[in-house]
Every structure is written in C-alpha cells, then in structure tokens.
Length: 131
Length: 421
Image (cartoon, rainbow over all chains, first blue to last red; front, side, top):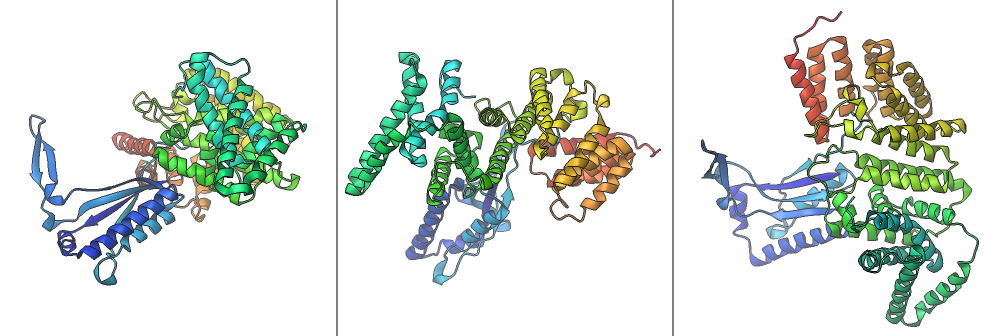
C-alpha cells in the first residue's frame, strides 16, 4: 500500500527555523538523510521531495480566456505544504510509524520538531471485485 | 508486455526458459541468490546477442552455460575477496556438477523454485517481486514499472528477499510432505495476489505496463504444468482464466467500470472460458474440493450465461453455501449474501448482511456498504441506497471503484423514487 506523508508548517514555524544554529540545522539534515537511507534500504521509499519556500508559491486560476491568473499565497493565515514522502509499505501502522519518526526529528535544545505529519493513503487503480 | 525483443517468439522462449535455467544453475551451485543474479544477467546477454546472432541451436543450454560462467566469475571474485575460505565454494560447485547427474526432474526443480520464492520468511510484497523475476523472467525495471515504484526500490526489495531466504537457511530442496500443503497454499496465495494486482481498469496511459494478471496466468500455467494433478492449482488457473475472459467487457473506453450484469457478453473471451471451464470440471472430478475450485466453478456459471438473467443463481448460492462451510472469510459471507438475494430476494440478502455488521474484519469495509446499497436499491429504498453508496465511495481506496460508486449515487438521485412494492 502506498501512502503519502505530508509535512505541513506555519509561517511561525518557518520563521523560527530561520533562527536555528548551524549545528541544529546540520543535526536535522543528518537525521533526514539517515531516515531516507533507511527507507531506501527497507525498499519502502517511492519518492521524497522538499518544496521551495512558500513566498515563491503562486495560486493559479484560469482567467476568462483560459490563461493563467496568478496570485501569491498569504502564509500568515494558513498552513502550507513543506515537503512529502511517498512510501510503499505493508500497512497503515508502518506508515504511521514512519510519520512519527519524521515528527520526532531533532530541533534546537535537544527537543524534537513534533511537526504534524498528515498520512494519506494513495488510491489504487485496482477494480476489486465489482466487475 | 514490454518487448525486450522485436521478435515475440524469442521473447516468449526466453521467459519460458528462465525458470528451467534458474533451477539448473541453482542445483549446480547450491546458491539460489547468486544463481538468480547470474541467470538474470544471462537473460540480458541473450537479449543483446540473439537479435544479432540468431537463436542458438540449444537456447536452454546456451543460457545455462552463460549463467554458469557468470557464477564461476562470481565465485572466483568472492574467493579473491575472502582468500582461501571460499575455495570450498568452488569445490562444492565442482562436486555439484557431478550431482547434476542426479535424477532429479526439471518439474521438481521448478516446483522448488516456487517454494523458494514464496518462502514463509518473506512478506507478500517481497515474494511477489522475487517470483516475477526468478520464475517470470521479468527484469527489475519491468517489475518496478508494474508496481509504480522506482527501479532502485524494487532492486532493493528483491535483494532483501534473497538475503532473507539465505539467512533463514532455506535449502533448494523439496519441503517435507508435512510442510508441503502449507507451502503450496502460500504459493497459490502469492499468484492470486499478483493476479488481483493486475486487475486494474487502466489500459490507457500505461501501455508499457506489464500486465500483471497475464503474468499471474503464465505463472499459474507453469505451476499447473509441473503438478497437473493438484486440483487447487488447476482451480486457481481456471479462476484466473474465467475472470480474465471478461477483461474486454469490464470497462468503457474511458475506464468506467461496468458491473457483471451490464457487460456486453459478446466481448467475453470464449477460448479462455472454454479452457477455464474444462480445467475446473476436471479438477472437481478429482474429489478434493478447495476454495479456488469453488470460486472458479462460480465464475464458470457466470461465464456460461449468455444473458445476465440466465445466470444460474441457485447453483451459485449452493456453491457459496459450500464455501461458507470451508472458510470463515467474511468476503465469502458477503458474496453468499448477494447470491441469496438473487435467489430469495433482497430482504434475505440484507438480513444476512446484518450478521456481518458485528465482524470487525469487514464492518466499515466499503464492499459491505456497496453490497448493502445495491440490495437496498433492489428493494426500492433509494434514499438508504444512496447513503450506503456514498459511504462505500468514501471508504474505497480504489479510484475506479470510487468513480463507479459515485456514479451510482448520481444515477439514483436522478431516478424518480418508486414506492417499494
């Protein structure tokens, strides 16, 4: 079963991250690197990407002529996606376990980030027994 | 099927030979994991060479020779790495060469490969990957593509599977008679999972995708060829054929699901139906009835009806009755309720469904909601049917099913309510 693990954050969270010390940042990236290596070795990693800063995000709608009309997003007011993992695992418990590992990633002062990770199952194209 | 060859005959031959070559090399060198790699390399070499040189006179011997050469290279490099300790490896290979004369049949060897790939130490996902490569002769890239994961992830899954087998100390030999039935059940389950994995709506954007249901049929056919007298192996092959026969009628061109009773039956594959029906008839005649044979017999009854209203539901219900006695799988109970509804009316079916509400294995499962919705629709209670179709749509994890269920909601909303008669 495939799951997507969505890491979302707030502007406040990102602003505080910008104050992290070099060693805090290094520790966090070392942790992420280790985690991805483990997920590769366990043959569970399908994809992992981080997204560019929300300041660069644009909300796009089709205008009357079908051409894109873009607008900035206003990160003060909402949570936004920072990055995601797609994993192929035996069942939901394992997906939750990986999400908890991500949430327990190191933050300054020996704490963990405790970031909320949204776990969503990816739908299959199987037709089951209907037809 | 993604062709490795422009020539379909050579492609087919190569994949037919893959398990035979692997069993010969494994027997000779007594190292399944390394032999599997060597055979995979030999297959790739053949892919590159044969189109230029033409088919060798004895393709099987050619592949065994090339794979054995790879094995010797591997053992020598291991020897160089570990010093003398691995001389014993080369020595045992030499001895095994003599053992090759032992009168063990290809059939036994192929069967042992099936057992090896579905070893109890493996997760289903690992067993599936390994069996498709080792016995199906597919490349890692093809398997990765079929499961929508990166090739590196699939390669890792296969090498972990082989490492798992190695560390469990499994030998390339037949399981004890005591274990055999259970091990064979595991093999059948893995083949069944591969078939279901390939049972997708899509033909469109994935033209390059290996058809997993076809691969499962190939593997089941191979297993049936090895142990033709086993009625459950025949039953599973029959079930796959009788289900696959409806493939062309199962979806609209834009991938909308068409339920069994609405399918254009002229699109069903009559050759597959004939083969599947004959297989299950012979299997049942042997007397050892099992779950796969019963499912196949039910599929045959559906396939034999030239119109949905000609379906022999009393006979299907009798077979589900039998199945319910043999298995406490709630999916069997669910299908039994559908058959009962078709014979005795929807109220009977709904009554049987109520018994399933207390079963944690199926309560909250979208299939229970979908069946309940269908039976409620049959009673004319559209508002309740809509509620349960909606529940089912929100609970399924299959995209085509979700779309189908949502369409049922829309259809009922647009249908004027009839008073239940």
